[in-house]
Structures are given as C-alpha cells and as structure tokens.
Figure 1 (tube, helix red, strand yellow):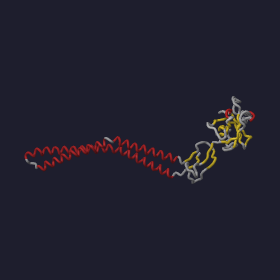
Figure 2 (cartoon, helix red, strand yellow):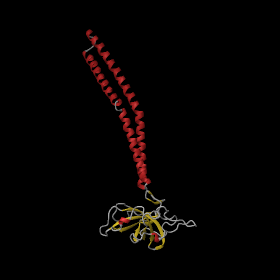
Figure 3 (cartoon, helix red, strand yellow):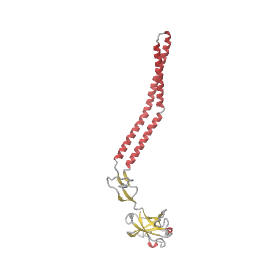
Figure 4 (spheres, helix red, strand yellow):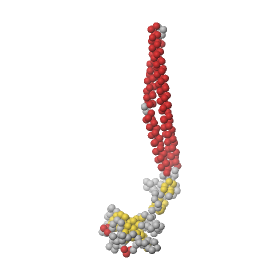
Length: 293
C-alpha cells in the first residue's frame, strides 16, 4: 500500500534533462558512425588531387629544365616551377597526415560516443529511480501505529528537529515480548521453551508462545539477562488484546513437558484451547511482567 507521495517537480526535471542528454548522445553516436567514413573518403580524395597536382608540377619542372638548355625558358619560370612542385609536395604530406589522423582514431571516437550513450542511459535510470522513490510504499504488511507528518511537511531522516520519518509501522501478527530473567534463574530458560503470555489488561485471554532468543549480553544494573519470547497470534486477533508497548505477563513451561504435543490442543468445535496455567513449571521463575514489541 502507498503510505505517502512526495513532491516530484525536481525529479521530473531531472528525468527530462537525462532524456535530453541521452538523445544528444545517441545523435552524436549516429553522426560519428556516418561522418567518419565520409571524412575518410573526403580526405582520400583531397590527397589524390594533391598527388595529381604535384605530379603535374614535377612534369612541368622537368620539361622546363630540358627547355632551359635551348634558352627558350627564363630562369624565373624555372624557379617558379620548382617552387610550385615543392609546395605541392608539402601539401601532399600534410593531407596524408590528416588522413592518418582520421583513420587511426576512428575506433576510439566511436567508443567515446558509445561510452557517452552508456553514461546518459545510467543517468536516466538513476533519475527515474529517484522519481520512483517519491511514492513511499509500505515495505511490509502491517498497521500504521503513528503518523508523524502532515501534507506539506519536510521529512529529513538525519534531522535532529522536525520530522525524520513518515509513520511508525508494525506487523501486529509478529510480536515479541522482551523480559529480564534473573541470572540465578537463567539456567532453566532455553530457546524454543513453551510459554504462556497474558496482557496485563486482558489476563483472561492467554496466548501461546516460545522463547525465541536469549540476548548475548546481561543487564548488570538489574543482575538479569534479556530474553525474547515470540507470541503466536491467532488469525483475526492481531492488535485486539495484545498491542505494542503493552505490559504482559509470561509464564514458562517445564522442559520436555508436552514436547510431543502441539502448542495448543483443539476443542471439539475446532477452536484452539487456551493453555492451562497449572502446566507451568512451579520451579521456574515466577511469571514475569514485560513489554510487548
């Protein structure tokens, strides 16, 4: 279920900006794929033209050198032909280097364009993910215990003052009772031990349960060890008699007693019978008052 919806203006703008960047990166990649072969063809054509022009100037220079022996060509014409031939040679070399600069890095240019597309796609994915997070969905099936914000409030998880959470949520079918057992009695408590739990406000409504864990550190000031008791809530009874933060009374059963029996017997009408408090081990600690979590 949806718990809240946050303002999306900034995130919508980020998504639009990321889509534009992705479109630009794709266009650039497409242009690179089309333009690189064209640039190579144009550079080769210019190089071929320069080579032809150089060869022409070379032929002209050789012919005028032969004609100079008959004194029909002036020295200035020969010098000009030599200058044109040398310039054409330099132009050929320049165009050949320009062609190499296009051919050699063409693969790298395409990889750079493809990397830009990948980066734009990741930015778009991140922007859409952030926008999707503006819809706050409950992570578990549960009940809202407390609403901490109103419409228009700013929620900051790291704030010292103000709202740092939207609401308090709990699964009322998955409750535990935390209680302190004195160190002198802890040897008779073990994981999986059957228990009977009664809410202080509804002591005529018992619940089956079992010891789920013994905490790894003791409470020195109380001389006790924290123990968690898992409560078995019958279907349809969630939050009716046993609620978070309520006081509860827990009684423990003897080790090995009724191990072969189910946690609760079945009455002829199909309802579950409440455990008999007389079955509790009298040698165990007195029923302990604790809080429900």
